Amino acid sequence: MDEELLKLPLTELISRANKVRKDHIGHKLELCSIINAKSGLCSEDCKFCAQSIRHSADLSTYPLKTKSEIVKAAQRAKEIGAEKFGIVTSGNRLTIKELDIIARAISEIKNKIGIDICASLGALNRDELKILKGAGLSRYHHNIETSPGFYPRIVSTHSLQERINTIKAAKEDGLEVCSGGIIGMGESWQDRIDMASSLKDLGVDSIPINLLIPIKGTPLENLKPISCADAIKTISIFRIILEDKIIKLAAGRESILKDFQGSGFMAGANGMLIGGYLTVKGRNLEEDYELIEEIKRLWTE
Image 1 (cartoon, rainbow, N blue to C red):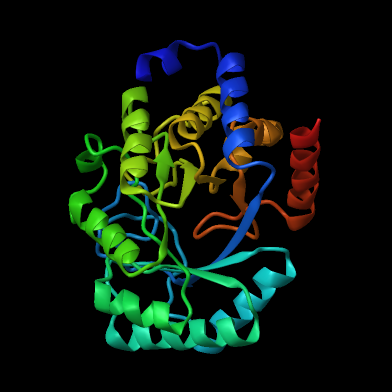
Image 2 (cartoon, rainbow, N blue to C red):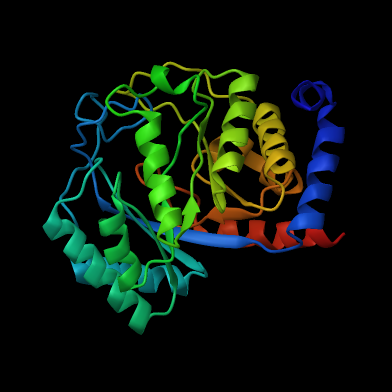
């Protein structure tokens, strides 16, 4: 199947992926919004990331935001039309105090705002995940970033197995799992297929696809961004392999797909982040609302 997908003309690949999306997902479009709740000063060495202290990217850094700031951001997410709100922190571990603040924020959001809550807080164990689930967390996000074979070329300070252990712990605690990664870091087409297959084997529920925007001051700053056609081809392959999972376009969709973002949703995507990303600004909401209407029109034609 792998070689067959790579040999298909792009138009045929898109058509096949769109049919898989129709058959397994229908017209469901999931909208998410996130808060960068703790920025920078990360000790890990992920080569794509502006938040690492090992790199020299120009980045605003700050400690964990207050409970009220996180709750206010959740209210804003609901107001702009997101159905899921993600709390994201830099670093691979939380302190007990940070975990408590986030748990209390989740509880208040759950009780007062009524939006589904996701969190991306690094390598948590089952006890920590239980605390968050008890507070009202419904989904945990933890990317595998790339294929097992390419991973050591991107991260050396923690293993892929550590990430997989966190994903499995979240699933064992009854949480949905969001896990994907970044396309365009120098990986091969086989790496992209292997990444999609790994996510399928892990049984994750939602797959965010980020398209690398090389950031000055990171080791990948001089990489040439992938083409729009290659991005759409990748989305199509992920949909065909992952069938009924949510495939969510995240950072890079604006700069890589440009005026062809609608094509990404004809190629199998059925979710997107709105309201900006972690260290990269997204499009304004009015443009995204127009895109959402375009997607609905394309799906029903």
